[in-house]
Amino acid sequence: MEVAVYGAGAIGSLVGARLHEAGVSVRLIGRQDHIDAIRANGLLLKDQDQTRRVRLPATTTLPDDPDIILLTVKSQDVTSACRDIAGLPSSATVVTMQNGVRSDGEAAGILGRDRIVGCVLNISATYLQPGVVEQNTSALLQVGAPFPESTARVDAVLTLLSSAVKTERVPDITRARWTKLMANLNNAIMAITGLPIGKALRHPGLVRLSIATIREGVKTTQLGGFGLDQSRRARTFRLMSTLPMPLAYLVFGGRLAGNFPPESTYGPSTLQSLQRGSSSELEYLNGEIVTLGERIGRPTPYNTGLLNGGRRVFETHQHMTAEELLRSFRF
Image (cartoon, rainbow, N blue to C red; front, top):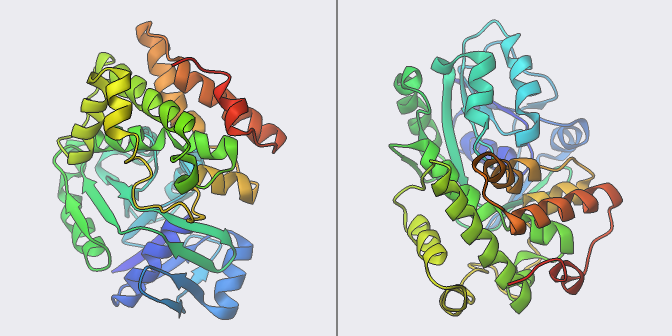
């Protein structure tokens, strides 16, 4: 089996390296500086147990004959990447591995519903320097068929990914994506302030903003006709959205930083994109809630405020202090 990882940044490089170590024939496809570094010195992979160099094939162009393409570009790049894939002579399975909820539909619109397998990433990784990737938390990948036509392709993807990373098959990948989206609504807070997650989500005001944003996201999603899955995280988000705000803050305020201690320097993918000079995926995160709210006539002041603040930071490359950000909101 030939596997191509198209869009090898933090997650793509990490998963590709793990697959290579598991004996899979895999090739990374990424940006020139990252590929040059990997070709020269191998990929420096840092994880929770060890640091090592992994030498594996890497290029800037897609090969013609992959059996499976792990699509790990950012959400905003899915359409252009799928047009590239459409030009290949193969009918490879394409595994969508983006934040947000649109990638399955966007990929299927170009490549066909029968080729798309969805994958939700429950993992934190860092890529700020060419040739270096760090895994910051444990990993769980969730795979499933976003369309009935692609059901037969899921088993091969599950077998492949399970050889390298803990992976589970889920009955409803769409609900799993909406659940992950609720967690990603916080990305804007770190991008706007420039604070690592362990510090930002211990700031009392930013924690209140985070909880208010998730509550608004859950309620808007439900009223818009979409649902979360049955995971423990989804149950937490539902409870967070139903408790009165003071009680939600009391119950969940100390938990949001999760596995990131105060001294952690990890910033989520949106902040990393800003630091690398890449484009923003916030339209696919907070923007999803804002768009849905407009469609159903429900105000979304928290997600709208974070979306607008994130846009300004990506335009100006000037962070706001926590206090400056918080002045835009009422709790």
